[in-house]
Amino acid sequence: RINNDEPYTTSRDVTLTLTGADATSGLNGMRFTTDGGQTWTGWESFATTKTLTLPTGDGIKEVGYQLRDRAGLVALLIDTIILDERPPTGAIRSARFLDLTPNQVRLELALEAHDLGSGIERLSYSIDGGAFSAPEAYSATKVISLPEGLGRRTVDVRFYDRVGRVSEVYRQEVNLEAVRAIQGFDPASALKPIHELVQEGLLRTDKRGNFLDFYDRDLLVERTNFPQPSF
Image 1 (tube, rainbow, N blue to C red):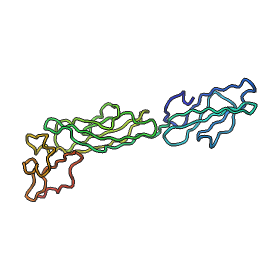
Image 2: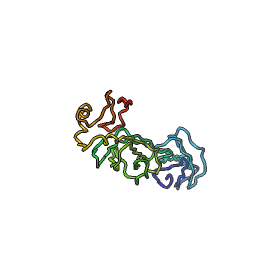
Image 3: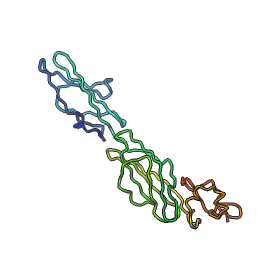
Image 4: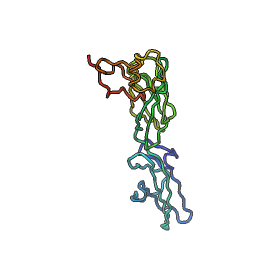
């Protein structure tokens, strides 16, 4: 048994708990492999515990254990454990509005997270640099309600694996300043082409046609390809 049958280890150094007996000729040694039998430790006297160092790299690690008796017969036993030394990685792939009204803004994030060791288990998020939420079960999508307020907003997300390692923080920035220019905002406006919003006075432009308010129906980020106002 490796580390008393724990499914994961965060350290390459593990402890084996061993059993062995031979009623006929008696035991005459044991040895170990951590690379599928390509290399072995030297034969040594049988003991009930053994400390080994696993190969580098997160993932499933296999330990082979051979017992030899005095007649030269050998038995092979194998056990596995998952090594997890590195934190998860991830990304916010996209974001879009589910609701965009003066009283409610709901943001849906498309998430991606990976962990080669114990696997992704949970996520948490923070709005506008505030405290992170309590970790919750990981999902590939997350809907977040933003508090009232205009201007640039940020949502930070981080991921947790099954041994408690935490990823770096991934950030999505959005710009809600457009709501300021849309009086009596109708959510149906979110489906209208940009030129119709301008014609109806929901988006303002200067005399040169530059946008004074920025509006992104998919809520990815502020549309940086729009000409900047010039005064």
